[in-house]
Amino acid sequence: MNPMEDECNVVRVLDIASGVVNMPKVKTNRIKYPDGWELIEPTLRELDAKMREAENDPHDGKRKCEALWPIFKIAHQKSQYIYDLYCKRNEISKELYEFCLEQGYGDRNLIAKWKKSGYERLCCLQCIQPRDHNFGTTCVCRVPKQLREAENVECVHCGCRGCASGD
View 1 (cartoon, one colour):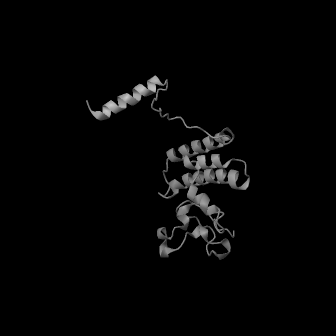
View 2 (cartoon, helix red, strand yellow):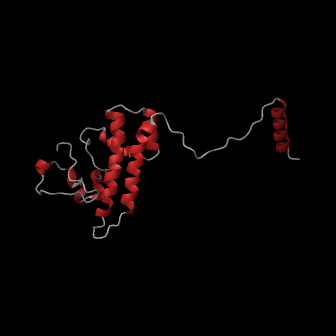
View 3 (cartoon, rainbow, N blue to C red):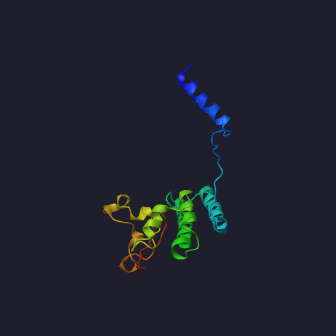
């Protein structure tokens, strides 16, 4: 007999003799929702349904980039909803806020940018990444309306018409 097996059997016998049986913990797939979840769940489920609808929506006749605009808009709405509830109105707990971000109901990086001055109205993270734009600058939607030369400007990435903090 292997000495390791002997040792395990001795431990089991001792546990049984003491009346304590060590059973392995069973992992469940059930998520434990924090307090207050029932208050925000209907809105988040509704936004999830809109997101699925936008993902399945046919994009015939649209440019390739325009097909993604509704998805970016709904993702922004979800993040904005969670941000407003926690940071502006203080209606949800920190535990529920963190839970929503961990479960993917909001974009943690976008919300972090909203907390910084000058980015309060940021539409998406792609608009501030200089590597995605000509000449290494930010998106046209980040330019304040007073400084724009053209009237109707739409962001190529998300369809935003202006998210500069000075607008």
